[in-house]
Structures are given as structure tokens and as C-alpha cells.
Length: 282
Image (cartoon, rainbow, N blue to C red):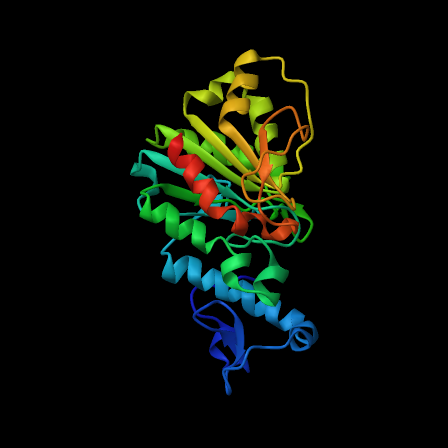
């Protein structure tokens, strides 16, 4: 299970740790772990990574857990999202949504974080920039859908999770301007939300930044929705082209540009500066 604050693995002087650059090194020698060493210890490193991220969310970024469902009874399974300090009083609110699989809040990719660095594999740089630019932000948790086979009410699927957070949390804030930043399957959840909510969502949704989203084309009947997405949604996709180069004929929904990287899991990191520039312009 997840442990708050300091926890077993991090306290048991492990033979490795993350250095200042977010790269795994040997405790004793300070040398960077080889690819083979990372491969051999992957399961342990992954457990350490999850605990390390959890510790960072709570103790470095001072994020607060919001338990879902918000009216959970004592014995039902729950999930949680993380909110930045004073998020509900900010005029700008950013929703950060990862892709599918075993990734948890704070992570874009387990393997990138372990094999490369936390800088490329985690959402930390997004937290830092959002804080610096005075956004409140919510870190979603779309992949926690059940515990011991029991579905979590309101988060039965990644799509339902986002819908629940929008209906029960986002709409209750004072934020005039809401922004969504979503990677991979997070883009599917986002498009699903827009399909469900229709035009009412544009009362405070200002922009959608996607990194290598895997959403598919769908017939949009509303002209307002079509126009909004064409003008205020950008998908940074894997490409050999330089960052921000237009990619034509990719889909009919959003503007599609190059993420400046050819590997799916790296797109949120490689498009980072462009994502925030785009959000600022909205």
C-alpha cells in the first residue's frame, strides 16, 4: 500500500538513490547505475520510485490529498487526487492527467524515470512552472479504478474519474480559467469529457494541451465545440520534425504539432516549454 511521508524503502539505506539531477546513483560511490543494473533491480527501483514520488508530492510540493469519492463512507474503496496549496482560491486552475497503465500521480513514465531521469519521467517540472505562474493545479489519478476487485465509486474508469473530478471538484472552485494538460490516454478522457459536457464546458475551460494523445476522430455536431478545439487545443505528437512544426492531416479535431521527440513517453518533457507558452497565450 501507499505510505505517507517517510517510508520503509526510503529509510532503509538502499544501495542507490536519486541525485540532484534526478538520476539514479549508487549511495556509496555516487556513480550512475548502468542500464544492466537498472534492468536487474527494476522491481525494487519501481517500488522506490513510487515511494519517492509520493514523498515529494506531500513533503516537497506540499500537495494535499483529496479523497474520492468526496462523500466516501468508512468502508468503501477510495482513490485520491492531489491539489496544490491554495488551489481553490486561484483564478487559474490546471488539471494534469497522465496516460494509462501503472503510472501514478506525479509520473509520466516509470521506465523513463528509472532509466533516464526524474526530470524527463515525472510531472515535477509542470508543478514548478504552474506554481511560478500562479496556477492552482490538480494532479489526477485516472488509473486507480478498484481495490481488491472492488470498483471505486466515481472512478470506475479513467474517463469516469475525470468526469467525477470535473463535476464534484472543478466546478466548485472560484477558478475563472481552467486548463487541461493531458498525456496519451489522458487525451481520450479529456475528449470524452467534452463530448459529455458539450458547450457548457467552455464557460471556464480555456485551453487543452495534449502530449501524444491517443484520442480518435469523432463527429462533432456542435459548431462552437469544433471551433473551440481547433483554436484552443494542441496535440504535441511524436515526430522527427523540430518542436512545434505543424503536422498535417493528423486529426480533424485539434491542431497537431511536433513534440520534438520520436518516443511517446518523452513527449511531455520535450514539449514542456511550448505547452506553457501556449497556455499563457490563452
